[in-house]
Length: 91
Image 1 (cartoon, helix red, strand yellow):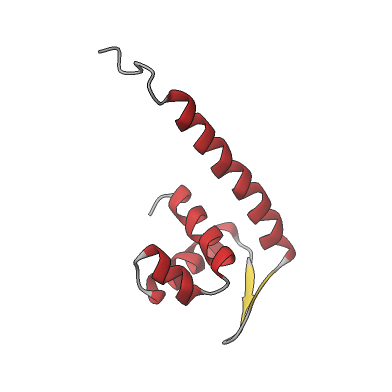
Image 2 (cartoon, helix red, strand yellow; image 1 turned 90 degrees about the vertical axis):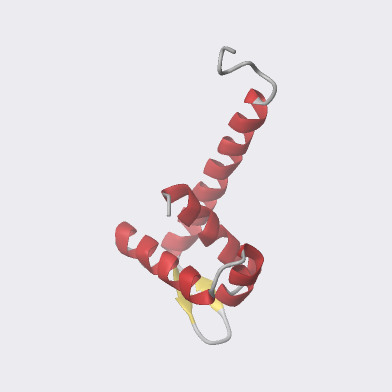
């Protein structure tokens, strides 16, 4: 999975409030979501959230990553929308 995909999945987990709900929304298994978030945390060398069976709480690092991540996704969305309809392929 791409880094952008991992970021989008992390944001989905936060927005949905659980791995299970994010998995349902994304059409993937809960295990896939859990492994993706674990790989992301491992690559970053930091825990992004504390998990219990009932609740997710972002760590300070997780909160900072979420804020930056939302900005990155917004920038990507804007870049895509600005290029829609342009003849970027020169055809």
